[in-house]
Amino acid sequence: MPAAAPLCEGEIQARSWQQTIDPAFLREWNDLAEVAAEPNPFFESWNLHAALKSFDPRGSVEIVQFRQNGVLCGLMPIERPAMYYGYPIPHISAWLHDNAFCGVPLVASGSETAFWDALIHWAGESTRTGLFLHLMHMPDNGELFSSLRDRLGARPAFVVHREDRALLRSEQSAEDYFTASMSGKKRKELRRQFNRLSDLGAVKIERQAGANGITDWIDQFLALEAAGWKGKEGSALASSSDTEQLFRESLTQGAKANRIERLTLSLDGKPIAMLVNFISKPGIFSFKTTFDESYARFSPGVLLQRENLKLLDNPQIEWADSCAAADHPMIERIWREKRSVVRVNIGIGGSLRQAAFKQLARAESGAQSLGE
Image (cartoon, rainbow, N blue to C red; front, top):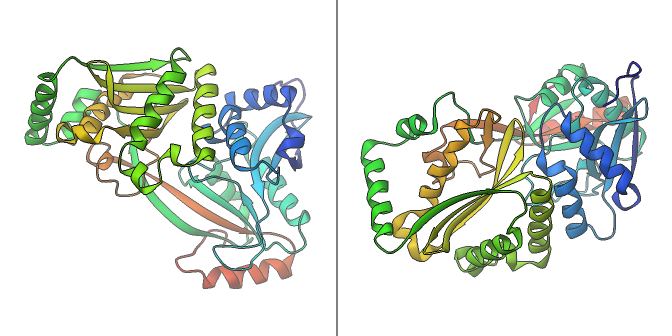
């Protein structure tokens, strides 16, 4: 980001993504991702653009741009729902799809305060009926959440949902971390399972970056997942053309941008466990994993997660977000730390609208005040 002139307070622009995204904007977007105060691969161009094409062909989602001295310093996709979890309550919301696990805006480091001031003011001015701005999957220990809380003052704002999910963050080596995470009995059992698996053929664990072989890898992952319980229940990525398209394009573009890492456990060249990480330094987001259920007695998913612990030995990586549901039965046996992510509602508009929002928010179960 150029520093030729002091940054002004900044301004917000918002238009349909279809009217916004062009090659020049993509270059600005990529530059912003490199200087973001907090990483979010789900809002980077290679990922979000693929999601918008898959899930919003009509272009109803808007891209909010925050600019200072003409430079793109903030970005977030938004929508304008008329309903709020089944109730007719108009509002402005960050836009996320079901396979996006972080909603923190991309904001240039140093521009956090100006971004929130401009966004909240713009949100109130851009709707006559909307009562609040809804933010989702916000890490509650990050720079953006902290700066938001500091700028609220007397403005009503509430945390309306909180979820703790597994996080990997430690100064220990991968081997020491694994030893501390699992009992000696369980580690012995995993060694036995690996040895039994090796009796069946050649076992190989491969870690790949870049785009080489990405199309075949995607095909294998989708087929492996569809063959299991997710395929039977209709929740596999390949069960829907939209989610399959997203997976194919986001991984293909992410591989070209050196933003993904693939791990594969194979037996005689056949994948029996696979996972993909999104790389957004200093963080990693563990996006999807699958395994061949006919080999479940060998715990192939756990064996692959042990290999994934080598993230701890990478000096460029400080932490990894599991992107897993709270109390996930497998990952929480291995990853011991937690990351808390929240949904936040912020009152917008004048005093009357803010007062109406405050009454509404206090009636919402579990809402915790932030701004007072």
